[in-house]
Length: 107
Image (cartoon, rainbow, N blue to C red; front, side):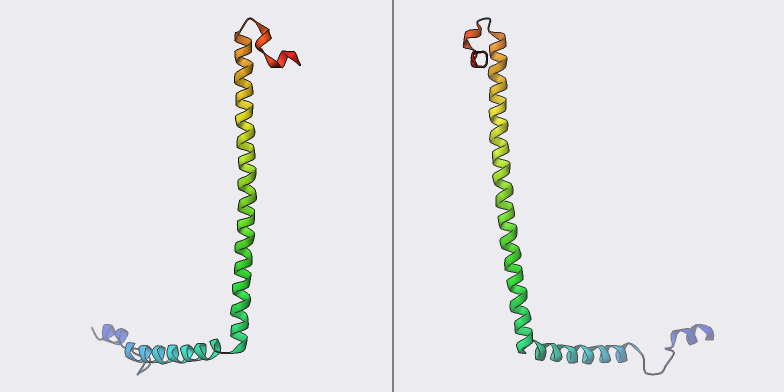
């Protein structure tokens, strides 16, 4: 039983959960204060503006690419519809004995 008590104690006195929380809290507060100080600098503003401009540029490029894809898809769709209509007319002409109705044979 004494072996279990030894294992449960921290290796170094004073490094318990409270101690760890205390140091993490103050460490986080210090980092937060430094971050706020940095965010108020001119360099941070320049980086933020540059990042925002890059993001806006990427958004515009993506919109342009999407518009191009949409136009190409619409063209392919129209072409496919025309091809289906031509195929349908060709089948109708094959079914009809009178070939005078078929515009493809007149060419």
